[in-house]
Image 1 (tube, rainbow, N blue to C red):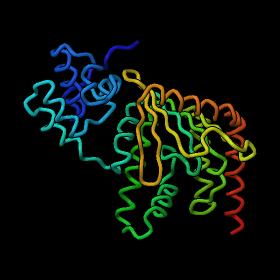
Image 2 (cartoon, rainbow, N blue to C red; image 1 turned 180 degrees about the vertical axis):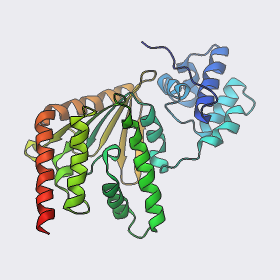
Image 3 (spheres, rainbow, N blue to C red; image 1 turned 135 degrees about the horizontal axis):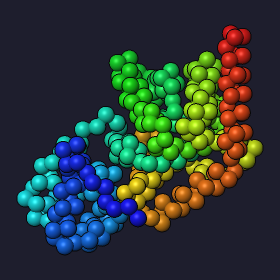
Length: 280
């Protein structure tokens, strides 16, 4: 098992807090589980804080100051973590996503954010916020495209997505935008940058009918599962819970088309959208 990731305390407030938390916990002679017990969190959660995967909350900072005799250090520095360009329900998941070495995601309705084109993302945000000023939409789109920069690395993170057939068939912003969006996914597949599979309508009932699922694995921390709803999101770190969601994802993969068949289908649907565009 890999050792704790060495954080540069100057790299970010979260890295500073993680490094200091580990240092003070070890000086106090406490295990991660022992430090987590008074906060009613698991030892793995403490490990995720120390490795920078999870974001420390103010109530946790107060308890750490108390337990470790930190004289307000954690409270003073925790405030710096509150600023985020992401919605509150997604901020912590986005930070974890940026550090993951593997991301597996099931998308039931929309192309995952990491794979969206600018035009597709703009249409999605406009649908979410029909009365927002254009500058607000521009900012949201820019932030989403910045997230996707993690794919500029040729190998890491591993991104494996299962797309429900509805993702291909739901026409977001018209056939031209859909054709571009699906060709973008196909291009990443052909470049061997991502793995993608399509779960066909014909499969009927499946293990994730209740909604989207994202699984994130790390080299230096336990895995996380992220569940998202309308304006809500929840990170799960309980090992048994994450294991159950991993099984859910495995069942989806088993029911989906192979990557080769999925690529052929995605490119075929993109051509259909191109044909529709030409007929307009």
